Image (tube, rainbow, N blue to C red; front, side):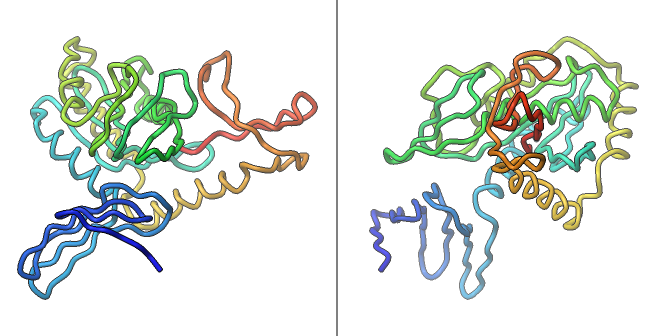
Length: 278
């Protein structure tokens, strides 16, 4: 038996919290938090017609897109849901903005609750109703995106800026770096960059190049990317070379210093490594 209780338009239960304002058979129902894995959907009903949308990702992406509309289109060129080929498969970037002030790579996080984290931590923490959930440091997750994009566009990596944009009812409980933003602060952070790094001609060339380099935004592209990520997850626990457990490590030197990867627990006898998915 599944127990739930309702307080005004809010419904609380084992699966999380939902906001469901209805009147006369019409209204909207959206998940505000999710405590366990499984399908979660936004539902809109008008009379006898119902529409369902994917849960958390749909809200976050749409909300951030609305914020980015405030960037002048004559200065900023925006791409959404960009797939790029990588040596080991593909990577997916939520938003890319090309301007004379640099290229901005945005990782969206639609989350609720309290958020704890630091730049050098491999895992951050989300707390909802005294329950803790760990998730990958989004700065490290976005680092691969910036590298892939800089390589695809053939531009210096220091001309590509990583931005993490939290949306939803979340609160930072630890100091965050300036490029970890909440809500509309994402746009404010981008506008703070006023040093010209590219000419207008460069911007047009970069826009054309990205349109050529990005993979077709089709269901097949997304399916292959998800399959790539799942294959990495399968190899996460067992080393494919020696059969010993794989463990999470942090690179201490080189171009990838500070980034998280999977290494064989049999090191140094086995030096097998696996790049974490983005």
